[in-house]
Image (cartoon, each protein chain N blue to C red):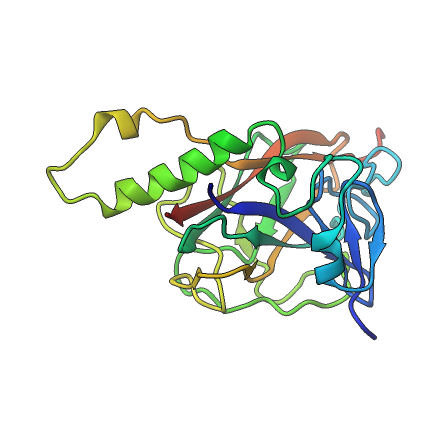
Length: 86
Length: 167
């Protein structure tokens, strides 16, 4: 069975990943390849990812306080789980 | 410009892949973005396992994505535990997708970290040292909540999916 693809935002179905990536999502307003599809914090997420790599690659002694203080942004997803009230 | 990244989740016998999910709610149904109140877990049971991955949809001029870290912030309800295949050492390689179940899954037996791990705990291409230099996805992250028979209420918390990017 061929793998099915679905947009988690607009819930549209696609026959393959390429078609999904090419669609203009009515929920996000952009294609999935557009950084804005990551949500309103996309610039902070991208900046933090680049900053982390800079920190890892920095030589000892080349510590940059500004980079340390950079906001740490991640792709946060809420979790909820519910057990019935007994 | 920088890379565009989303979280995907697979469900069902046919491995339907939902892209750019809005949440990772856990419950008693195999579904993406599920309603946990409508699908509560019977105390003592497990939620359906989640199979998720980090998907780079565009590199945006960057050269690499690596150092994937997964953790949860916030407490679970009652005495529940949260298990995963994510681990910083003795990584078992890429988790193979199978129809999600409410029973224990091989290699999905590590406690989900509750703070940022010191190193990568989810692989790319089966290795924690792996990287993406073009569009593509990480290994599957498997995770599942194991409730206790005495638990009476659920909880809300946040799953964190972190990557590093090289310009």
